[in-house]
Amino acid sequence: MRSRLDVLDGMRGFAIFLVVLYHETSLTGFRLEWPPWPAAPIVSFQWLAATGFVGVELFFFISGFCLFYPYARHVVEGARIPTLREFAYRRFIKIVPSYVLALTVLAFVNRNDFPNGFELAQAYLAHLFFVHPWWIPTFYSISGPFWTLGVEVQFYVLFPLIAAAFMRSPVLSWLVLSAVAVGYRSYILAAGLGNFTFYDDQLTGVIDLFATGMLGAYLYVRWRHPLERARVVPAVATALAVVAILWGAQLLRALYASNAILPQFGMYLWLMQHRSALALDCLAFALAASFSIGGFRETVANPFLVWLSVISYNLYLWHDGVIVRCREHGFPCALTPEPWKYLHDWEWRFLFGSLAISLAVASAVTYLLERPLLKLRPAWAVQPSSRGPTPADASAAPL
Image 1 (tube, rainbow, N blue to C red):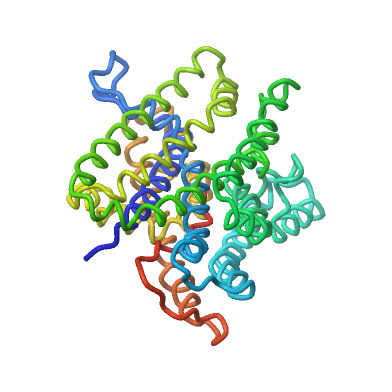
Image 2: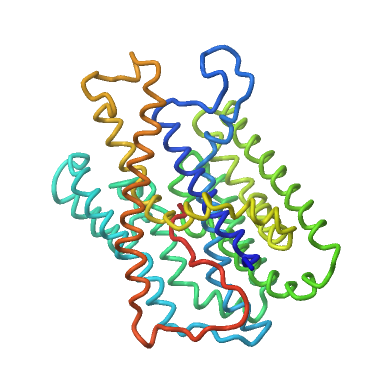
């Protein structure tokens, strides 16, 4: 029987799908509309493509859920929790080897983006120690999506303290961290700093997403057994999950519309004001889908999204670099300068060509490096098996 928490794999797969879709469409001009020519489209999902960067919000939520899950089981069921050494090793072996490989390759490939070798070395070292989000020059350097790795690892450093507080009082801890994030974002807006993501995308600005994921893990474990015994729960939970999907779609439509009101900065400002609503929607969907009818859970955790979930970390690390370089070299029609100006079907060929390369690279690194390393844990890092389903390892890709 498949675990109810397989829905988290489906959510992670959908998160990386959103992020890749966002970068593919923003760099090619490809639009999710039909018909694709300039006439008024009959069907348009451009609002989904243009707001795909919120997949990062979903990644942060899932990370908090998965990391706190064994601690929630300890509080509710008395299950064993990882030691600090086990936690640190697991995070290191999952994150660092794949990241250092991508960082080194992309730093070399993008070396001409830096005026000199000294600035390249500075950026590389800042990324290597995951502090690059602290400075504007290094925030988006080497590869734009890497900023999330810095935020994620900074959360890992604080996680043992945050987890200790959550084990004592999960709801109060969630309220405190959410208040910190909302207060910080409110200050940014009041200070007129909301027109650049550097200030908003610090750990303080997104910590409520992690905290809401941690709360979700606690509520799931607390409610799991009584809800599984109630016959009416699957139907009600499925209906609530559908409502959460519709609510999420409406939030993304509103986010997309905000850019028409204030071009370029509208989405940044909207997201700062409504990030808590997105976090609560993630919470509602994750819990409702976990207790939904089997067919709905299998749809969420379908094989394609689960596979994307498996390679999501490395796909997140590599896809932007692949897309940017393919575009710079006019791939897949390098003999035609600036093909997007002359070839009407270039977007389609570019979309599938760059996507195929990204998937191939991510799969190779996942199956040849990441997964073998995860199996080679020292004896002290092997945790005895415990009762109940275990969510898949938290992805550091948020996106």
